[in-house]
Length: 90
Image (tube, rainbow, N blue to C red; front, side, top):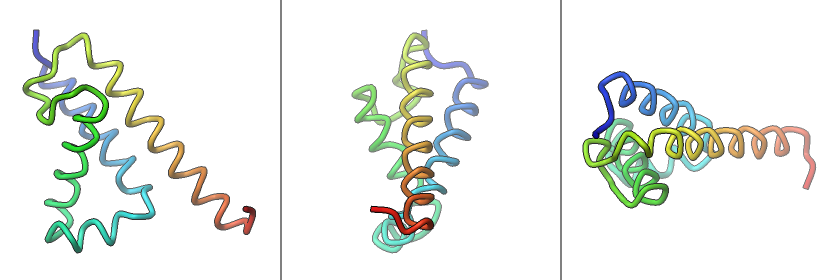
């Protein structure tokens, strides 16, 4: 069974939060040709890395928690890295 529309929205929002926390976002957006294209390309790359599918329309509903966990781990890792850089710790 595919993701429901509500699941797609939830995953997309969490992915957006992770993307916004990523320090490499600006360079990625310049290379991708803009914010929307950069986010979409990045999200598809991450979905492929987590599930082996680039489109949420090809993901199965049983993959929902795996993908949520993936984007949550990315976001937390990016935020932790940013906090470490602000504190000046190695």
